[in-house]
Length: 78
Image 1 (cartoon, rainbow, N blue to C red):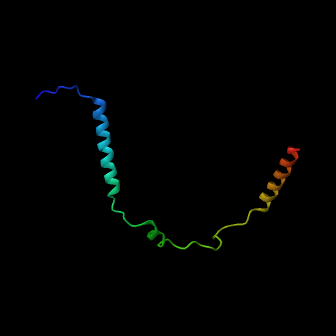
Image 2: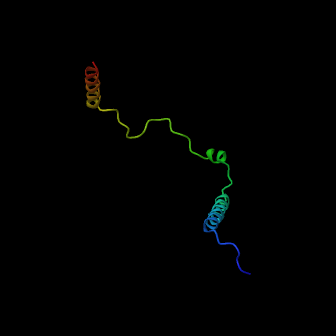
Image 3: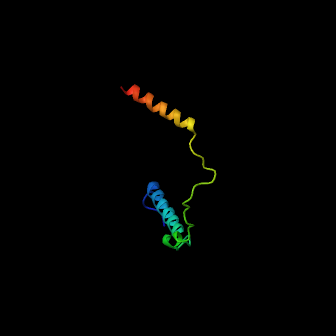
């Protein structure tokens, strides 16, 4: 049986893209992960409230430099 209408390449490409997207959607929906997020949050470790090990106080020299910078900025704003 001969084809009576010419083949529309754009329509074929659109149909192919729709089929590929549908296949991808199905794959994403069937990942097997069905555990609600709330159930997983309960399994997280508690957050720490103490100080960090190895944390140091800001250097006094850095504080002095920051103070000088603020003074200079204030002078230049005048």
